[in-house]
Length: 72
Image (cartoon, rainbow, N blue to C red; front, side, top):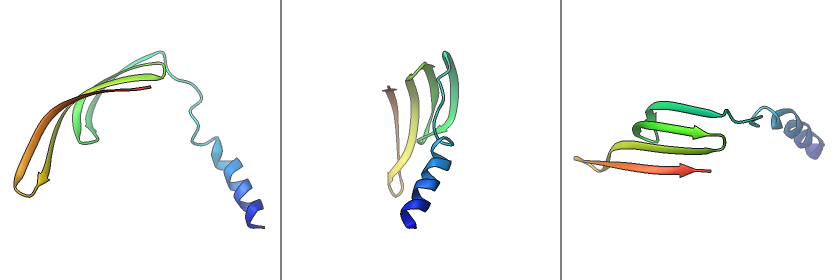
């Protein structure tokens, strides 16, 4: 019975989280993305992000840096 319920749950929710297709091109301004403020350019399934990070690794000490990344 547990296996049947698990299979039914996977069939029902499997399509809810799937991405049907990627947009051609897309620009976005991120006010908060993994603690960064930056820009993102997406071309089909490839995304490039450049952002400014400000964080506190230690109490009372603020760390700031820039980060660039690519996701495929």
